[in-house]
Image (cartoon, rainbow, N blue to C red; front, side, top):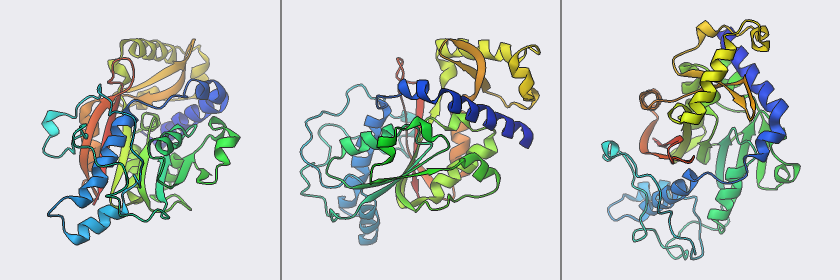
Length: 327
């Protein structure tokens, strides 16, 4: 895909969120179901530091990246409907904690000083739902959130004013196109996440660059978590994509005036409308499993895969989650 097409697709999505921020944020209030699975993985990852046979150095590093903090007994049971991690990846996948193996939540085996805040990078943070989820899931941990997005209108002023949230309005894609792998004034973090964004990133090369940025801002032995939208496996969304695609080919439509060269689109690239408007208002990329494999390979020298699972949507498979550990 050439640079002019990439820029045009970025502009299309930026325009969409600028025009529809209020209606989009209004439909995005509940936490994702897949985050519950992630919370269990974070607990399991924290517990590893106390595993017999770990070296002192390993325990120290894993301890540094424990984000769960001292917690009170949880009244909630682990979700029973989580989609299991793929058996084909069992050799490299950290299992989701089961009720019998969940670490003690009374703080007795937590050796992290309570005063140290756990730093989190949320790339394309949207309306900051994940920050609220993490604070509720780990109420006794202290977090310092580094939230990055190009559309502050998605978040409420009250949320942005919270003392533990440092919001930066940055166009991460322009940053990546310029060859930058670091985001100014964003530290190395204990956890880096990116939800609901990778499908808006045009071209495989740029998606690899975004993943490299997440890894660059993650401390050794800490986790990077990314979601990949697999919307073409959903019949309703697939029909919408086909309808928007047909409209994008209509030379008399307003879309034609945008000058997007659709011949430059890559396989699995699509357009989607919004709510009742079927027009091609936003660029979205569908991720088959092989493309997730390729992205993992693109950062193979700096991170290793520890988990992959599906969640969300009525099918429970709308998003594919990838969990990496920084080497």
